[in-house]
Every structure is written in structure tokens, then in C-alpha cells.
Length: 600
Image 1 (cartoon, rainbow, N blue to C red):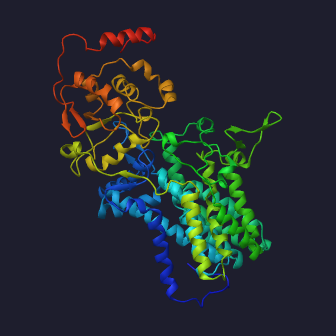
Image 2: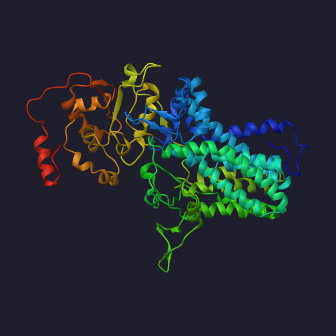
Image 3: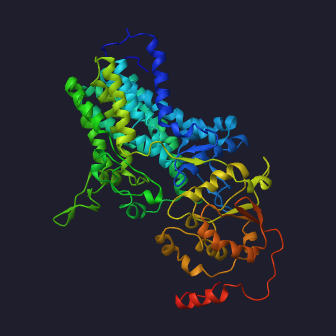
């Protein structure tokens, strides 16, 4: 990675042994960051069980399963049964690396190994960027530690938003920009464009953010106009060529008539407060969050690291040529602050007018993109701060470099308030699926309905996708598994079961689940939708299960009990009852008291 590096101490005369030491150090950093999962690498998933981990671990398995059957991972009937639909997995880099690993090691270990590789590559790319900005090889280790051990990476892994954890393409694009500034021309521009395209293919947010930063840095000079054009034009063409395919697939998957996941025009307004960014998040340690979403399981920190920032400031004094990089990086921070200034829990207004920030302008220029998370625009700033911090240690004694490396790690993983050691999720598959798993090669008919439909305000119900990697049966849920996104949400029998589960209050109001609290569950209706089994996971939400179980027993008959789970086969003859269920009179009194319509 260090070809055409800027001249400096330790350049090409560096000890050859260091070439082998650097990858080992980067791998060691990755093991440290992901350490919590290696006690049981095949039995745990890296990330919190309350958030996006489950559906992101499902993605590589889906790619592996589709490719094994000679199909492209584009349309699936495994989700949103019986409708199915088009789906572009949000993290194609994870899927591309994880699919062959899944064939070899199974979905859990494949997921963990792919993330280990991602963090190691982030360390290596930040090291490479530091070298391009003038750091010597020993000092570049500080950049590797500050990038891979950043609060940003730890939060992305905790949240299961794996595409946001892949900082390597962003750092690589910035490194190629530094190289193109020294050796401009079509060849350098093409290399830069390929790196930009890779960043955009890995994550649209990364591509957009690093594209803005790279454009700003090229315009800040010192290239002459002719060299700027000779470099920027090939970069734009190569970047567009690489990013066009994945971007087109993503947009097509959101807009097609059978799109499994849709983005409504009102989505940005609905998520405005949810995704608001308080600028203090970039410099405040101790777990400061712009909006506290911990009740949903998410932890979002934009913390850049006070220690790394202090070192970066020293680095700018030692190498003033990098001040243009600081300006470009600050632009990423401004964009990451969202479309309107947010401070202390509210949007700021002056004279009755909102304080508008550049993010809104960027969204107006690119109205077709479903970009709703401005904080992700900070990714170029994370790697730039890491690289500039390394420049400050260039030429220093190794004991100081080692101390600085430890300092940025402690700041990023501990003092920041990041969720480190990172939480892990149980990858064990419930035994209730063992004897109903679909044989390989069999059509995907006969679906499973897992209950409860929701697990409070979290995304915990998305574990039903991960469990599908074992039973391979269709389910009515989409990657964000919950009642409101399920294909059966309009079916009265499903709505009744969903009403007895617990979810966000606003979803109850939006879908009026209250009116479905007192309805029946008719096996014939569920069978008509292609469902064959109903499985109640009592340990996921004992409160909801205590309400669901007696009703399921009444309508569906005695279940098969496997550990904490109950399974009903809808193909069996349902029980015949004389008279109403035991709770009918009580429910009718409540229904009348709440002025709800009769059950369908």
C-alpha cells in the first residue's frame, strides 16, 4: 500500500521486517476491538441482540444460499411470505466476503470473521493514509489504532450497522487523493476514482461523504487548473463506473413494484428528531448521544477522540501542508451535523427561523437518494483525525509512539463511552426448528409464523431472519421484522396476535392494533396464506407469551413443546369448542368500554 509514499523518515529504507509486522499489528487491533466474540466465535454474533445484528448476519447466508442454487440474491420468497419481493442487501461487502465463509464455516463464524477482516482492513487503510500524509512507519500505527479503535467503529459493530463500520474504503480514497495531489494525472485520477467507487459501493453514505471531502480537497489546491482537470475527470468517470451498478441496484430495490423495503417521501420528516445531531457529539466523551436511543438498543456516538484531535493539532503544526486536509475534514463534520442546528434536545431557531446547515442543501441536490442519517457523513473525519494524529508522532521515540497508540485506544474504546467490550448475541438455533427444516433444493412452500411479532421498541424480532438460516422456511417478516412491516399486517387473525405483542406505542396508534385485541385466530385463514406452523417463543417476551399462549391453545389446539418454545402444526384438525372462550365476556366488556368495533 505504500507505493509512491511521500519522502520522510523511514521511507523506502525502512526495515523490511516492518512490512510483515504492520499486518500483524492491524490484525491484533482487530482482535482487540472484537475481543468479546472470540470466546465462542461460532456460538455468538458480534453485536447487540436488540438491533440490526440479526438481519446483517442473515445477509451473507442469503447470498450463499442463493448462489448455491444458481440464483442471484435479488428476489426472494423467504421473506414477506407469501408475497416475497426484491431486496438489495444493504451491506454487499459483508455479503460478498461472508458468503464463501458461510459455505466453509456456517453463518455465525462467517459473520464474525468478516467483521474481523473489516476492522483489520480499516486499521491497514488508516495506516496507509497516515503514510501518504507524511507519517513514518512506526507513527502510522497510531493512525491504525485511532481508526480501528474509534468510538465510531465500536458503535457501528454494536448496532449491527456493519456497512458503517467499513472505514477502509473511505481511508483508501483519501490516501489516493493525497497521492494524486503529489503525482497528478489520468493514472492517479483513475486510481482515485476506483477507490471512490469502491467506497460508494460499500456504503452510499461513505461514497457521498468521501466524494464531497475529496472534491473539496482537490479544489483547495495546490494543483494547477490543467492538472486538476487531468486528475478529476478520470476520477469522476472511474468512480461513476464502479459505483453505478450497486447504486442502481439499491435504488431499483427501493422503487420497484415488488420492493420489499420502501422509502416514503415523508421518511426524512418522520426521522428528523430520531436522527438529529448535536454538534457536541464530536468532542464530548463519556457516552454523549445527540438523541438517546438506548431504549431501542442503539448507541450512536460521533466522538472523534479528544486525544487524537490534540495530536492532530500538533501534527498540523509540524506539517502545515496538511491544513487543507483539516479544512476538508471539517466539512465532513459540518455535513454530519444534519440539516438544521440541533442543541440540547431541540432544534435551534434565531428570530423564529431555523438555523439551516449544508446537509439540507446536499439532500436537495440529490433528492432521489434515500439518505436520512447525516451522522454517517462523519466517516471521512474519523479516518482523517486518525491519520493526522500519526503525523504528530513522526520521528518520535518508539516509547512515545507506543504510549500514544495506547492513549488513542483508551480514549476511543473506553473514555468515549463506546459500547466496548462490544455486546454479543446468542447464535444458537432453537431446537423447535430441527424436525421441520426445509431440505436443500425443495421449493420454499409451507411458511413459519414466529411469535411474538415484536419485542418492545427494539429490533430483537429480527432474530427470526437469522433462525431462518437453519430451518430455511419462508417467514412473513422483512429484515426489520415487526408486525407493521409484515406481509400479513392486514389479515385480522395476524393483527390479533400482533395486538397481544408489545411494540412502540406510536406503531400501535398508526396501525390501530387496539381494535384487533379481541379478535379470533382461525387456522383456515392462516393456512390460506401459506402458513404451516405457528411457533411461540416464550422466553423472548414472557409477558406477551403469557397472553398469547392460552389463546393459541384455544384456537389451534395442544402444541408440541420443545424447550421454551411451543409449535402448532396448522395442518392438524383444530379443536372444536362449545361456547365462547373463557375470556370472551371480559374482552367484550373492555371492547365496549373502549368503544372499539366488534371483532371481524
